[in-house]
Image 1 (spheres, rainbow, N blue to C red):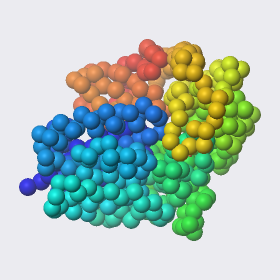
Image 2 (image 1 turned 135 degrees about the vertical axis):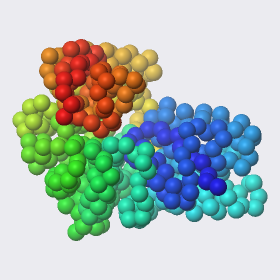
Image 3 (image 1 turned 45 degrees about the vertical axis):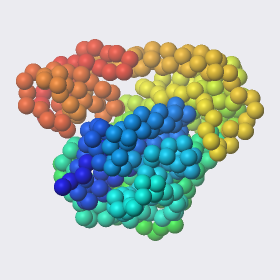
Image 4 (image 1 turned 30 degrees about the horizontal axis):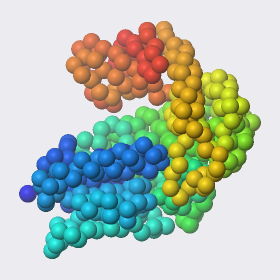
Length: 451
Ligand code: SF4
């Protein structure tokens, strides 16, 4: 009889991809996906510790699942990902109903760990594996060779090209939770994308903590190429219609990568380039290793090669020591670059980071006020950016329809709502939509023509 698996994923696209990999690994062991925790045989919480709030949500969900575990003692409950990596022992002490705690680099061991737990003798045994392994886990290759991807995988997929990070930004947990940077061999990536394309996947997003440094700091350097070269090779695979990547560190953004936007047809004109602050003093304390001047040069370079490129960014407000002047510099940067979108957060102390020890913490109410001011300005700019599309025809890749009401994304990653007017469309189809309304976060228009 098949066993059911429910995975709740918090945080970033890296985690989403890890959850997909786990689903694929466990599908090979006979697991089928469940759409809720209640009644599932195995529940895994894939956690994120990059913000305090995300971590609190994990502990609150684990608390709620205590009742489910009491109702269904054979349920196997696991915590994986960054919180597991960082807080493994604390989870064991605080949440004794958890059966399994697995760090970021050990997810490929899940099938054997679950098999062991199923045969355990006493209910007090739990399985923990938080080992750091600075090599490319073999599971990705195994999956490529041995497993068809689930039918539910749809028309767009993430492909991990590297893991870990060497940058040690002073506020960030990632080098601690995901380890040092390592790139996958190019041949594995190409093989995975070829399989996906042959299964009808049309859009690929190459994933890594800092994709710009793909192949640069690598024990298997002779098996990799530069990131721009990897993009060119992936783009030449038959069947792909859109190519994206995320995330990038500004210091490693090369002119060769900028040129890719002019040369590679299927590379979408959308670039997520986290700046974090508009103040050089704050950037220095964040250990970001660039200045606003060099950041702006890179923005100008991108726009030279691709004038229509949509830029998005990440901002942290209220970093320790951030003055009103520093914050005004962030608002000025926003007005100058006019990002199409941004993810903005209040600074929060994260365990084991350098900035925890900074003394000049900003009061919560000041952080809240700054965040609101930033987001109000970003919303106004986002609306203006979207309004630039009015009366234009844009290409939209359909994501989902509810009746005739459909939505999909432009190459610049804007969400577009439209009515399909009875046309038999499927997710992944490309349509042309003439935009007639713009909101802060999305566009509306009329379908023009099916491609
Ligand atoms: S570049 Fe900085 S913020 Fe990004 S993952 Fe690495 S350490 Fe964290």
